[in-house]
Amino acid sequence: MLRKVTVETGVVEGIPAADPRITVFKGIPFAAPPVGELRWRAPQPAKPWVGVLKADHFGPIAMQEVPGKDPNAFYSKEWHVDPDIPMSEDCLQLNVWTPAKTGDEKLPVMVWIYGGGLQCGYPAEMEFDGERIARRGVVFVSVNYRVNVFGFFAHPELTKECGDECCTNFGLLDQLAGIKWVKRNIAAFGGDPNNITIGGQSAGGGSTTAHICSEMSAGYFQRAIIQSGGGFAKGFNQGYATLEEAEQIGCEFLKFLGVSSIEEARKIDAKTLFQKSVEFPAPRKDTHAFEMKWNIVIDGKFLKEDPVQTILHNRRSQVDILMGNTLAEFLATPQVKTVQEFKQYAEENYEEDAETFLKLCGYPNADLETMRQKATINNFEIGNLIWARLNYELGCKPIYFYRFNPEIPGDDAGSFHSSDLWFTFETLAKCWRPFKGKHYDLARMMCNYWTNFMKTGNPNGLDADGTPMPEWKPFTKDNERAMYFGDTPHMDTEGYSDVETLTFEHLYKKWKASI
Image (cartoon, rainbow, N blue to C red; front, side):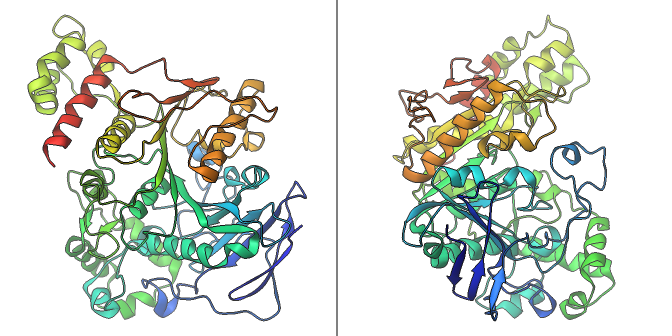
């Protein structure tokens, strides 16, 4: 097995995974520690080390709330289970799982970007074990990056100081630095630097979308996997602050800190700075992006416009895409208290289609709660559908689109946001939930589909016993269908509610008219 590898900064030695045919290298520095004068700077080159780096443990997670601090929080039960996990501002390390026996095998490569709203998250989350993916002949890499105020702060002093260097979006720049490191070094691990897939879920999916839409990231990967990334959903991948707006937030934050310069702010210890950033009042604006204090910035360098505009005008990187969502995430129900307010909601949101919308919801004869439930839609799904249709109409390669909605045991959360991660990584055995045979079968096939896509851009192929898996057809004009991951995988026969279909067609019409 390939246990010792030489990379650009030295020799690194990994350890056998649970399956000894896989070697895992944990905590490899891919950039210099972003501390002191390097706080709020684009990632700088890592320094060489002397001797052999024992890559036998994950590096510290980025500064954030302590995972599992609130034992009653939903994700504390899922995977934020270790409040004692090391945390540090010195966090720019990555991890590699490889099945290679030599460094010349040219295996496909996957670079994973974790989610957490750009405020938290880390590669060491137990669902992100790359072993099962590596067992299928893929070199898997997970990259750490700065989040919250450490990753998405902006200030006029930084803009002046950085010159031609990017002056914000440090978390995205960390991700890109990790991807570039993979491009330069992954051959030593048996990977093919010309066959790289990037991907992530939630904010990791949004980050992947940003890389697809950034000229700075173009050419470093061939495929992308976007799990619950939002697509064209209202407030996601759009409505980001301009550099000037982000700088103003930064000025207000320095006042809140009681300092007058970036130099002073860099001297504040990381724990105190993070706590102050949590206490800092959030700016309010009518977009999801602005409700988050520290978020992606349209800085004119990494991003020149909102990603949805880049996609809409077909200015994105033309890479293969696999994309989808879970069916119980971010459900939107009209927040109205009277029938008259419901009618007003319809007129404001559906305009010329308001009458049809009201009829589909049972207006005026149904009771208010019945109408509200009929009006409930999955924003992420609508946003993804818009991208998938637009994609083929613009002449791009069709997207492989999925909907995830199996029975999830243990509680009544359903196919909640992030529940698909246990399945795509095939790590169900680490979960507290009482999964059984059908879940393990589904996870095996989903991991097969994902890794097939990483290899060739096509998810189809054989199951472990050599039989063909159900065919996953791409989303095209003649097949506006998703692969439906219920208790078994099959092309979607469940379909969408009448209100979801109307919402999709209404919003798609508006987006097309805006081109």
